[in-house]
Amino acid sequence: MTTYKLLLLPGDGIGTEIMAEVKTVIDWFGKRGVASFESEQDLAGGAAYDAHGKAISEATMKLAQESDAVIFGAVGGPKWDSVPYDVRPEAALLRLRKDLELFANLRPAICYPALADASSLKRELVEGLDILIVRELTGGVYFGSPKEIVTLENGQKRAVDTQLYTTSEIERIARVAFDLAKTRSSRVASAEKRNVMKSGVLWNQVVTKVGKEEYPDVALEHVLADNCAMQLVRRPKQYDVIVCDNLFGDILSDVAAMLTGSLGMLPSAALGAPDAVTGRRKSMYEPVHGSAPDIAGKGISNPIAMIASFAMALRYSFGLVEEADLLDRAISSVLSKGLRTGDIYTEGTQKVGTKEMGAAILKELDLLS
Ligand code: NAI
Ligand code: MG
Image (cartoon, rainbow, N blue to C red; front, side, top):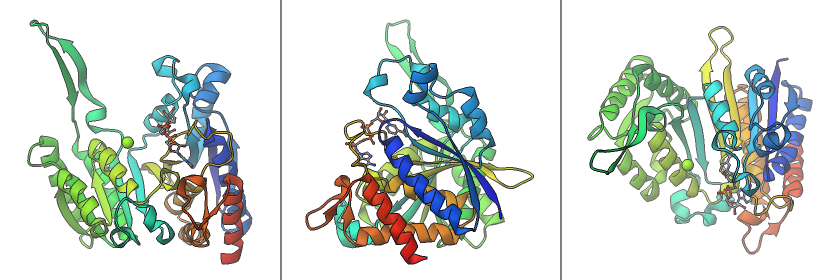
């Protein structure tokens, strides 16, 4: 039986509450006997800053490097609004992404049938929606240099950001998207702006070449990123896997996310390159939402985004697809039975707290397995 090393970083605010629930889920899967999980827990974000003046310590980074997956809650909050920029809580996330080279951000947008009425779109447009946005996370305009604001001789200021991509950066994110598509409906849509951006031209060429040479069985469609945004709100179910650069991925994944209802429901993954020897990837799994200081400590936060993030770890880091499906089914089933935390509550459903929601998912796992 394989043992996987997990590093749990609850972070701040509701991060600690939702981590407590996912821990019970991890224990449940440990007892099931298909794999064992060794977990360590440590500080990150504001909690780490309070303890030792840095958003994440070197010792914690070492644990992250040695782990098979980092399970991350959320960081930040008003308490740390005035700490210096490079030690602010969010620096923990950036450091993890950068040092572990987590270049592929996976953001699924799944519309659970029981929540289809919570979407901003009509039920028939979103019911059964299951798309996966694969966003390049370590390159592009957020990182390219020069990146500066300079004062010109005439007193005006000029701001520069640089969109920069190399062939190998595009190839590796394309492969992640094609590999994932093979486990789904074998369709990839690649979004760029080749009509106005050189990086879009290269993106298009490289994705086309990788598709043709390495994934002839996956259908590839190219779509201009602005049109993709429009199509996502017009007819989202036409897509399966969407691959795009860092900037477009940031925007398109937020658009797709809101099709599904609540922030408290959305998981995400960030993956690195497979190790040349073991084939294992560095990875980090986290809910899309933040530390929700407005509800922290009240026991009312929704643990589903965190628990669904662990389902992604089962699927993408450990290859435990049956277990991942089981956990996703348990979540869906609890929702179908009418249980809701405050963020997804509607009249006629049963309002529950964080712990009750976690316990209900465990009970459902027992029932379904
Ligand atoms: P947020 O996602 O924490 O909260 C936005 C709204 O959604 C709030 O009303 C909150 O109560 C609600 N919400 C979020 N998650 C929920 C859940 N699981 N269950 C129920 N309701 C939930 O975003 P906000 O308020 O902009 O940021 C708060 C702090 O979190 C800031 O310090 C921000 O920098 C940080 N943040 C951290 C992130 C991370 O660690 N990855 C991501 C986004 C924000
Ligand atoms: Mg964003």
